[in-house]
Amino acid sequence: MSKANKPKFFENVQIIDIAEEGKGVGKADDFVLFVDKAVPGDIADVQVYRSKKNFGEGKITELKQASEYRTTAFCEHFGTCGGCKWQHMTYEAQLKFKQKSVVDALSRLAKINVEGIMPIVPSPADRYYRNKLEFTFSNKRWLYDGENKEDGTLNMNALGFHIPGRFDKILDVNHCYLQAEPSNSLRNEIRDFTVQQGYTYYDLRNHSGMLRNLVVRTSSTGEIMVIVVFAYAEQSEIDKLMSHVDARFPEITSLLYIVNQKKNDTIFDQDVIAFKGPEYIHEEMNGIKFRIGPKSFYQTNSVQALRLYEITRDFAGFKGDELVYDLYTGAGTIANFVAGHVREVVGVEYVPTAIEDAKVNSAINNITNTKFYAGDMKDVLVADFVAEHGKPDVIITDPPRAGMHPDVVARLMEIEAPKIVYVSCNAATQARDLLVLKEKYDTVKIQPVDMFPHTQHVENVVLLVLRDWR
Image (cartoon, rainbow, N blue to C red):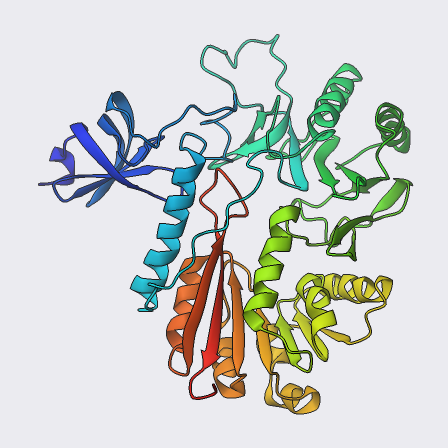
């Protein structure tokens, strides 16, 4: 059947799985359908709006039979906002399909026996669980059905999240269930005040306008960091807004601003100016304090981060005399977390500012058995590095979503540490790396952890033991 003759409408499609983007997966003969807001177990009529050779994307025109996993989304922005795309599934179902995604990746891509996989660790909270959110100011608000963009009376300013696939359109967020107060009150107050005062919002196409981004960080210690990013602004305008925020939200402990005139939103190369308080807040985990600056990386679900690190520590089975390499150490969170259980930890990370954070985190906790090095992993983790620091008893690796560089995987094969604990936020790239490592290592334990309810994301911890070592 030619593409032109492919049917655009299918009746009684059974939804059998769910894809990463939150779309349900169904089949009509050999034609695969990715269906917006469909849930496994649904039976629905589907209208196709985008068609390729062997698959199409569509939407439900009539739900014939609702899945037992289907539930009502609790957020008014669901379906338009790019976040929380699994809100229309019960949390129990979300956990089931996250577990399945890990099983599928490791069994199909790495050809690993996953019979011993442990049940996924659920998040105790499925709302207000994030400790960091970033919002974007834009003069190109996303318009809802019935709103006419030609209407000159419309307020086109927005403070919220990017619309999926539209870099220049921002959803004006009223209430977000991802971060606890004062996040929502603060964002709405800043929007109301700046609109009233005539502040201009950033134009992502023309690179004009005053206000650019808002970052809110909260912590379990009760400290709050707020960063306002300006594009172009007079100091008097900056001071007026920052003073207003300070007066309305005195609980903010670190009130900062940045003037970013670049064409991209990254702030890692920008100067941070403290309007009130220090340029950091603290997070605490198992009695260990972590200093978090405006550019620091820290796991965004604090409660589950603790559980993730406990699993990592327990998988390693430390006896107290181990030399540990912590690869992709970030701000040294895992390194400092396990330091009290081992002889020494050597951490390596690409971002120099993160390494500085890692050293500070050791210092403020009086941890003296850590060493940290900045550089590209494949360039740092060479034979001379291992010769200098010693062969590790345990390697902990927690790479970004892309997984480890092939050169790094090859280096691990050469080092032959007795144990590797591989923490991953992407089971597919983890499986790709495990396929190589399985030549020398047995997969002994597998533990998925849900860090991000209502999304497809899942963390997975794997214990690898060198064959013939035990």
